[in-house]
Length: 499
Ligand code: AHR
Image (cartoon, rainbow, N blue to C red; front, side):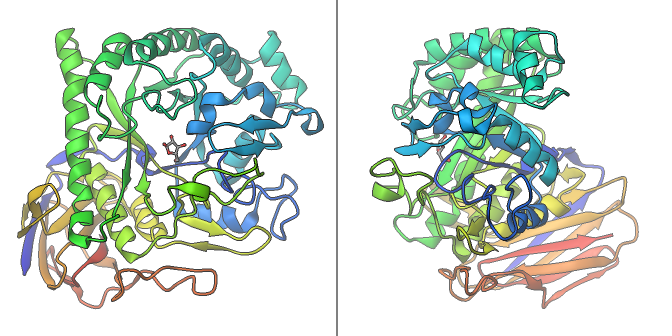
């Protein structure tokens, strides 16, 4: 099996937006409590932020983190999570059947973002609440002072405004499971009015409207069109949510989830542009894939909802294997190859809950398999995504008649001269000989070459064997006269950095 790639520094799709390497922290299970926040943990700082988790997050490299939900946000009163901790109410969290103590809230999250050197992406509650509460919350966060809510923030010890720029207008409002779900018309209207009031309150906001909660929703497409038809002028982004599943345990079909994501992105782009066309508008709505991951095992019964209203129960604790890491890598490449429209994305979620990082409450933290492709992409996909010429074989599986065996992306940084080629060999059983011409990038050398592969596709990383699935130095890669040659193992993820 052989594949040939031509990459030319002049053929630019777009710069890869740093926000594409975002993640997500929801008040759900042990993501906050026992995840990023655990006062009393051996590594916790004075704020109760776990130091071992922070160290892994720095290595993972998320650039922006969405908070506080997810389904949780649609029943959340932001006022519950600010002010003196001993006066914060304990509430039932209807989304996850849990008890929310509110010991962690907006200001703690902002402190944590500073500690982690991460930008915040906040969601407002458009389920049980509306435009007025969203505006009050924004005033609390971003207004300097001299008004009720800004002064309330100052009285809580936060003199300077948080200056939060990126806001999601609700969460999955099309889903019947959502607290306060809406029709497209109801949501389109409330998103429009909320966006207007938010923009009048604070300058320079980036606002994302909710798209469908999945491409498989019966209203997918019609929902995006109608919602954007209402709020097109007021928003910058439409969101996409995609969770990949493999109930059938068919690896080839599972790997075509990457091609389904490609279709999803293309379709949402087309719908957004159709709304623009109707208005003869040059404005382009960008895509925020603000929830994506593999998620299908921990998705029912007591893994999905607490029983008896527990505090921080172990929900959605998906254990990832080698196969999942391949899908995550391929999905990242799909986003990179759509760098002109996918400008934000959040791997859902960050710790414990469908997450690249796992912890034991009171114990250690470790990297799941999916940690690795994300960390490598966040570290190396800096600069311009290039439009490639790719010659490779194809396979048939799932909905795909001719899915390319090689999934690849090349990102070139004109400032540093670095160029990285990412390559996923989707052949189940054949090695692939890859040749890649890196044109118009000057003389180069291979700076690093890594391979992620495991004979057992079901291999996982655990507390006791945290590095079972981990990148190793690539055994067969060379760069001569601007041509990269490498042998890619079947079902392997490969990263080649050049300078
Ligand atoms: O990420 C887990 C959940 O998945 C989120 O709360 C919700 O938005 C989605 O359905």
